[in-house]
Amino acid sequence: MINYHTKFLQPISIERLPFNNIRTSVLNRIWKAGDQKVSGKLHNKVIIITGASSGIGKALALEVASQGAKVVLASRNIFRLSLVEKEISKLGGTFMSVIADVTNKSDCKNIIDQTIERFGKVDILINNAGISMRALFNELDISVFEKVLDTNFLGAVYCTKYALPYILKQKGSLVAISSISGLSPLPARSAYVASKYAMNGFFQTIRLENKANDLHVLIVHPGFTSSNIRTVALDKHGEPQEISPRNEDKMMSASRLAKVIVKATIKRKTKLILTSQGKLLVWMYKFIPAITDKLIYRAMEKEPDTPF
Ligand SMILES: NC(=O)c1ccc[n+]([C@@H]2O[C@H](COP(=O)([O-])OP(=O)(O)OC[C@H]3O[C@@H](n4cnc5c(N)ncnc54)[C@H](OP(=O)(O)O)[C@@H]3O)[C@@H](O)[C@H]2O)c1
Image (cartoon, rainbow, N blue to C red; front, side, top):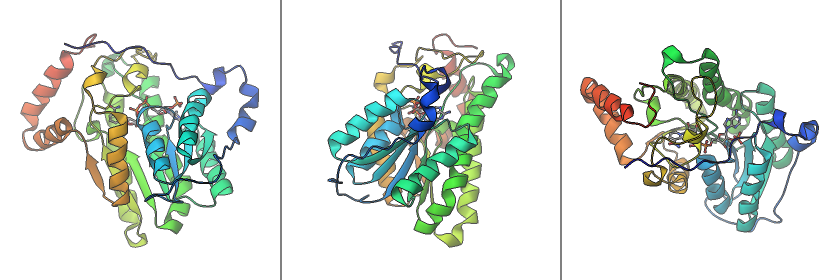
């Protein structure tokens, strides 16, 4: 039986915060959790994670910090970033937070500038920040389409643009958190699917352009993973839908996914497809697309409050 998921904290827009006037100083906040006590495979690696305040990004931040990385946390929500900081502090990790809306080019540049100023290099950029939507394209306000593309695709492009020169110096890694929806269609998620297909084409091309430069590019295609994404997903008017239409308890956990992504990054793998259900779907869509289309449609039609 499908359970409605409990309501999560909604994202707080920086513009709506009462202390918006301190945004500039907050953008430069740096916390250091004492001397680095953690050693591991990522010792001294400088890793930027966008969308580090929740779900998969938060889990990735904790995982890399526990393996000795210096982690740069980026997102729009100060409060939730501070909760992640506390958890990294407990691990004895080294971190810095930069408040950024990835749809804003100068915020993306600021993430990289602050990282260089504080840590002097960038080894790995994990382009994870993302939002979803649920509505039929025919009924969708076009601004919702633009917001999803601006966040998921252009946000990753901007961060990559400013970080790439530094990552190339380190012969480091670019990680793109795409989705199974970047490899197969999903009705009522047109903007989300388009943004994830766009990420694939972009990052595959960046990989090829830098073949001679030892740039490592990993594209990750997670399946359903328990997080906040479906709760804050936008409806046809651009409002958060507030309730997950799926049973989050039955999904892969964000911390399990983070461990697999970090392992694949260390091994410099180029592609990661997750959950066995996700792998099966991608295989079926490749070899029996017409049947798979029908199965996907039927499954999505059964979601509570389906827009079909
Ligand atoms: N969960 C899944 O089932 C699933 C499956 C496949 C792929 N993915 C992908 O995994 C990534 C992480 O999603 P999640 O599931 O962990 O969702 P989540 O819990 O909702 O986390 C999304 C993160 O993105 C940040 N974010 C959203 N808009 C942003 C913006 N404009 N600027 C900066 N940060 C922004 C949010 O932070 P603030 O609100 O603080 O800004 C939050 O930290 C996304 O790219 C998503 O598409 C998820």
